[in-house]
Image 1 (tube, helix red, strand yellow):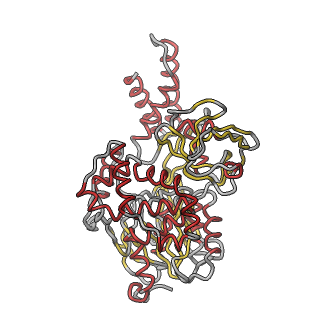
Image 2: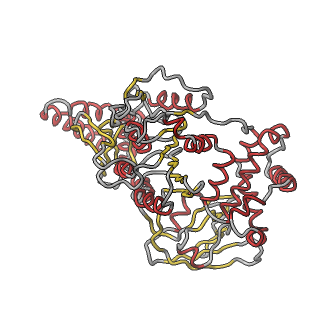
Image 3: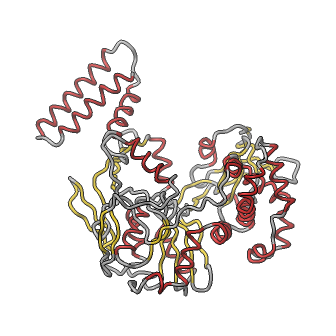
Length: 524
């Protein structure tokens, strides 16, 4: 089978190469491939899985072209379309699999599950009367999602209640949020954390900015944001740039230059602006960061971005699968190519280079970078792959220890917090009327950390005293932030983590409060 796949790949590759020649040559190669395929399927000694052969050949061809052309199966396409849509139809819960049980992490506000009384920390043990112990993570959505108006019955176990509770939930449209957190740091500074660029991103950002009306400074956090829809990157940039400003331009062998401009009145044109980025900020995140930097509109803080600067066009196949073929490169307004260099067919080294950069704790030297100039102040910015921040903040490894890593990877801190909330929710809500009171007065004390250590031991994680001494303060803040999230929402989680554990966030706040010193008079 492997030899057949390789042979098919060679023929496909010949056909693709022929497309650059005359149409007659192209047709000849296509006929040659069709002829071979007919001979193979009609005469081969054994029965062939032709679907598998074709899929393997397509994957092999695309892997030889560039790192971002890809094949997506029909089943994967359903998940992809949903994750970048504005909504899906289901019951409205976020879940994890913990100890073979479907654990409800959160319920969507106003969603079907919340309306019937399902709570965070509940466990789903049956679906339509069937036990689901040991169910795979990927199988849960197949059972819980479904067309609007249909229903599903779930059996719920809740701490403090002996019997299994049964809920029948009528499915409905569930919004997919791309903004994880949006809050005021103080009267003048706002913070927005964006996780991807999907259909609803522009409208979500508009609403977040309206909710913080009156702020004069903003931190837009694009760390870990791997991108998404390019049009949404343009719309997001448009909130900060003058109408008519060039946001990004693209061109390729078969794509003439196309300029994408800001086309509406901006919502936050004159306030101080900082974009946070890291090694996982890619694609649409890099478009936004590059446009803001090139137009001298704000400062970029963090670490050099991933460097994904090619455009893929998606072509749907007859069976519902799709291929994404790289058709063009995109450029920042100053002309920088964001795509990191790669050798055709050498995807392994492409990603290995990224891992080397990710785990290097020393400041990166721009030996591979080219100098460009911003459009207003003519200050130097760098091309050659990714967006280089104006202010680099290296990752903080102060609190890192193998012990903490084991607690996180094995879900110990998260599960311990869940158990604590189960036993103390009413008491906590009665004692702390709001987050501000909780932040000031709640303490993760020695008794709690001792219980965490024992809980870890019961799950096979041996206590490491030196590791705890190094990471203990971070672990305590993590626990407190998780408790805040489960009592309120993700805003409160980020308010804790950002304030006490995030050096890039702290640097951004410092810069905004000392803007003249850092901006050097170059911004409008």
